[in-house]
Image 1 (cartoon, rainbow, N blue to C red):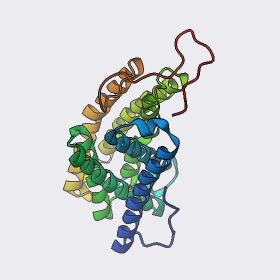
Image 2 (cartoon, rainbow, N blue to C red; image 1 turned 90 degrees about the vertical axis):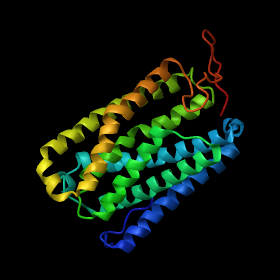
Image 3 (cartoon, one colour; image 1 turned 90 degrees about the horizontal axis):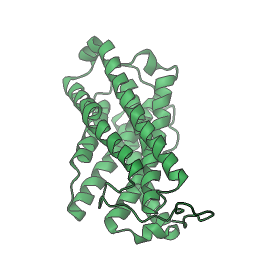
Length: 280
């Protein structure tokens, strides 16, 4: 993730906002390009993919890196003793500002990459587009209405806990490792993370219920609408659908993102010993 913030920065300054958002955008664009360069040099599987799959591979790797940043930020807000946990509606700290701004840069990158990919490959994933829109709009709102607290945005970032496992799952699936114990263990962890996402969504509803008056007083109506519509979609549509798909994928390893067909398997055949998948 981007380097640690300077504690002397004025995080209420528009200039600082724009610089760190740009830093986040540039950093994750760099990760995307780095993934392409490294994968092209090292992985035979990557070279055999279609152009659209290569873009998806690089986006998945980029999301995994952002997922690590998000897990750290989210757990710090959720479990640490900070101004955020003390005042869940107005509490802010420099580290949370840094994460809000870099996350805004990442979500800007995600939306640009998604829609450019849609134009180039003439495709459109409505649930993903809706998810990206609300993520970007929500974090832009947290920047625009700079007095709004960062507890809920940081906990929202923790929903990205599944992305590193999703990255590993899809890459190994494309490499034909779906018969391996490692892939199955990762798939179990990914499914568990999606269940944790659902629990986390209900926790956010509980926080909002307990802070309802404060939210109505201090958070602008538009920001509340963006947050609650996004949380509603995540809780009752996106998370259940994704959890269901990932569970089915454990039992029937299929690339849902593309051809919906079982991937070629390079793992050990039943009853064989000592046979290992080839390097991807």
